[in-house]
Image (cartoon, rainbow, N blue to C red; front, side, top):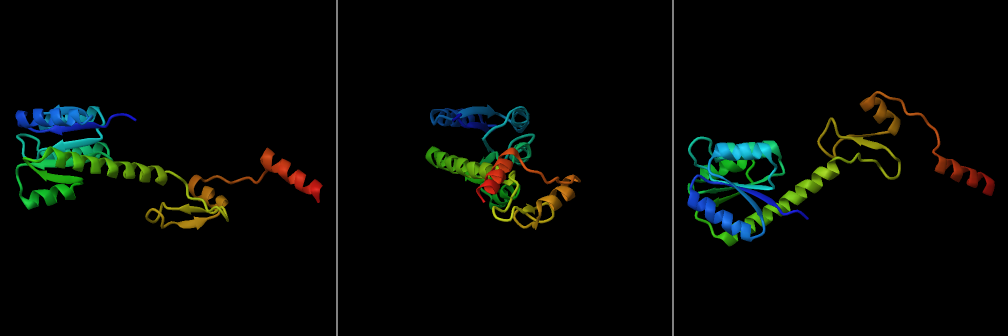
Length: 191
C-alpha cells in the first residue's frame, strides 16, 4: 500500500518545519507550502490524501486552500490548524467541508490521532464512491433501481428492458447465451 501523502500549509516557517519533521517520522509522505498561493498551486498539480492548513495567512487564506483541496477531490481530508481559536472560524471551516479543526500549538500525538481518524473516514468515502458506481439489480426479479430522479437508494425499480429503453434509448433483444443454451438443451434432454 502506498504511503499517504500530506500537504502542510503554514506561513510560519518554524511551524512548517517542525510539523514536516514530526509527520515525516510518522511515515507520511510530506510536502509543504509557506502560503495559500503555493498550496493551491501544489494542490492543482498533485492529489494529496490529506491537507493541514493554517487559517490566517497573508494573501490567500486557509479557507481558500480548503476550497481548492475539496474542489480537487471531495475525498481529500482537510484539517484546519490555527492559532485563531474563534468558534466562528471553526464553524465556517466545517461548513466549507473541513474534516477537523485544531488549535495551535497542538500536541503532535493529538494531530497524528486526528490524521489517523481522517484516513479512516477517507477509506470509508472511497468505499462508498466505489459502491455508488454499481448498478443496483435485484437478485431475484432482475429489476434495476434507477436513482437518477431521487437520492441514492431512493429510485424506482424497472425491468431491464424499461431501464435500458429510458436511459440509453435502446431496445433489449431476447436471446440466449451459449452457456444458457447448453443448460436448456440438457434440461430438455433430461425430461
